[in-house]
Length: 139
Image (cartoon, rainbow, N blue to C red; front, side, top):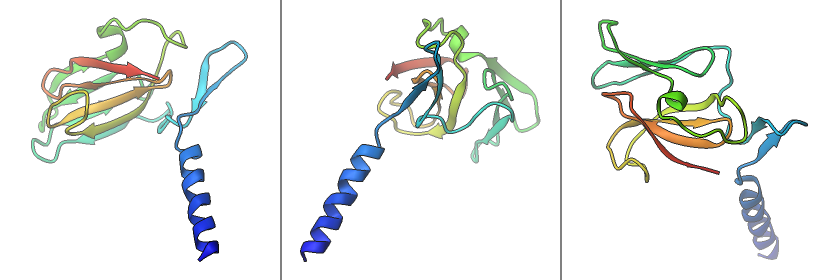
């Protein structure tokens, strides 16, 4: 029983330690890595809405997001960072490192949005119909 309790405490402690967000900086103070980074530039990414069949493309530079309807007609295109006039934080030009559908999140109160995180730890969501970015915070 004692071994099980020790193993449980060790597992719980490890989980708490390793679940923290880690941000890695280079010598000039720029964000170059961290636990919040899920994707890196080089390849475009695509999300497909199973209900509307609209699809959302994050370009290979991880800066622009473009929405298309099921026929391939462009609905909107945005650079969320510039279009929302976000202030510089930790890096001159942040890139998107997490791009996913999210629903019922604490910030949007909407049923379905695109959640994005930047490499500088700023985050927010895009409205699927308009592409309007709403800033939710930074670490």
